[in-house]
Length: 194
Image (cartoon, rainbow, N blue to C red; front, side, top):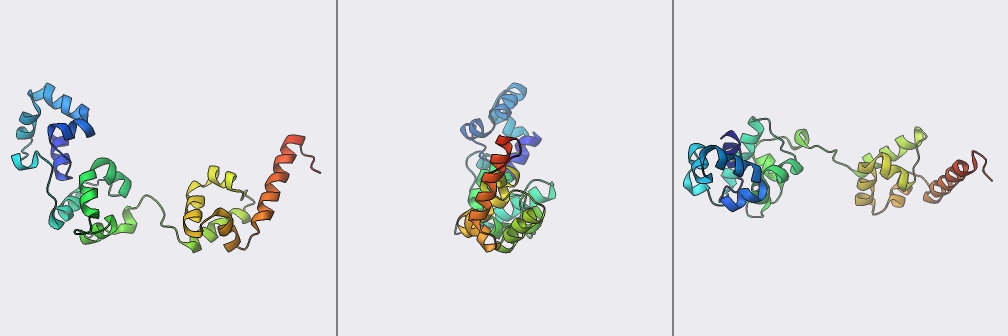
């Protein structure tokens, strides 16, 4: 019953077909335990009006966010999309909040504290590139993709390309590519390069 109540609080579609899409195991368990999905909803105290797709308002979005926060739930965008897609979609509608960040702010949740991922800026990308260089780490795109996918993704998003980010950090992208070829040649020839 707790799983049903939690799903209801976060705005999940509690219609039979909706639950069959997002959590067939819950639906089957409820049917085994109490006989039917409808009976499970009644026992969980879910009002009949919420058994169909939930109608979201600004207030209900804020209330759902606050409830998830109080329960210690994951309020990152990825977490909400996975566990409460109805809430995520409702919050981002232009007539409500327009974005998940705006909805979190309206609920009094500090966005920076719940994000799973670093919020990248051009300065942070440049600092990341320079840090890799100072440590002697490879700076070619393939190596960075393997070692620090977040850095290269942010660089491409903010600068348009990895090479443009390298140049913003004061490095010559051609020099990085040449060094990569030399390292590859050394590996293939057992340490001797020409």
